Image (cartoon, rainbow over all chains, first blue to last red; front, side, top):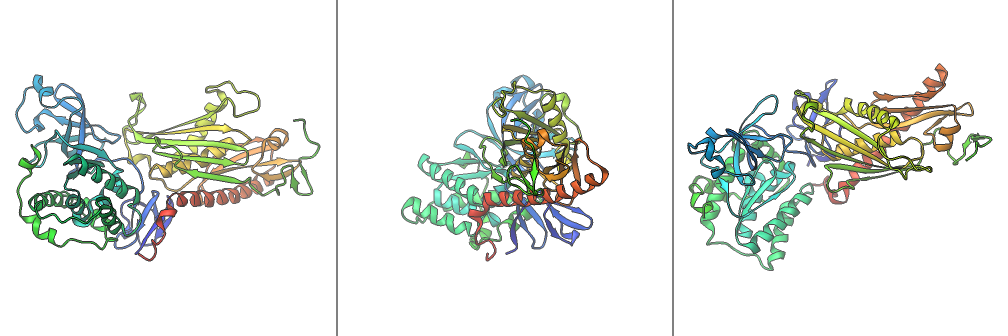
Length: 280
Length: 243
């Protein structure tokens, strides 16, 4: 496949119409603007191997409250810019004086980027069925540019991971990953995610991860009981990419992988909201 | 060291190099775990380490620009980096080097992508042997790429000078001390010059010829920079073509 490692300033193509993320155009030629993996098929884009999370409208992310001000919570979103969660974006009407009763410094939240303006003022919201405060489990961090690989093509990687480790996993676009489940399973899931992060640029990732999980557990395990959980989880993750351009990134990103799970497509439609599952 | 009688004899320099030869270079990418990007760079007797952080929040706040990132560059020599102990901390020289090095890198960084943020570059000279600013720029440009910061291209730097009325590439300490001119140059691989300084004297023709020599030197360094970046991931990437 047309993937290669490129450095900034590397010539990629003469067709400027195909230029996409991670590239720039000069003298009617497309050059790479970052150090990363270039894919030349359909669109010419370069996915950086490292870098900070830059918030975009519609991203689902995990933030940590860093300050409570008069009518805003200031949220660390693992980016050069801080997130602002206005009191009116909280699902319930609450009083200014009671803000830290609901969310205090250090609390983690799943949140949605409602708006980002020119000067990178980032407005967040909790006013969405899918959003909530994170009260249990673990949050780990991965390089934001590797998030699409961790999710896999139409959620294949993450679905497999959830299925194999018996954990609930939510991946924020800012590279924070929230996992809930039994301690032992969590350990395995965390190790696997770290492996994915480290090796995401090597082809054949899915196969290696499958083997890694099998090895770690001694035997391949079939999960019949967890079926319902999986259904719901899949739906949750499918929604994410569908919302905006990330969608395309994910599909593009993971074309390398052969493992696809057609069953997901069916399951996405069924299943409800995660409330009971997450609010234990 | 006292001034040697001749700095160049039969076209061979004191350290055995030809006039248009650069010193051996060793590069290692990603040497610091806590930095977003880093690079260790050896340029003959020079040993420098570069670390890049960012884009990140700007402190103090008043330095931030509302439409682009600010680039901050700190060049620092360790007190043990030279024979006679250097008094630690910034001095007139290192402030100047920091400024010109920053300006050598700014043109290639897409600063406008990150309004209200800062990109911090730290260059520490562990051992100095003439040409530390060029070594610092070479290292910093690799560290920037390693940090995933969008750039138009890498920047490579090397010096030309004149010793015993002969133009030579990449001066070492003795040639710098007893030579007639020293001209550090930084440029992109396509030949856009981002830094050009000179002390000493060159004629117009020498200047033109020197510039061409420096171009060749920079191109050679650009190749090595590229290879070093590729190597960071190459042990893992084999088989990418047949995918």
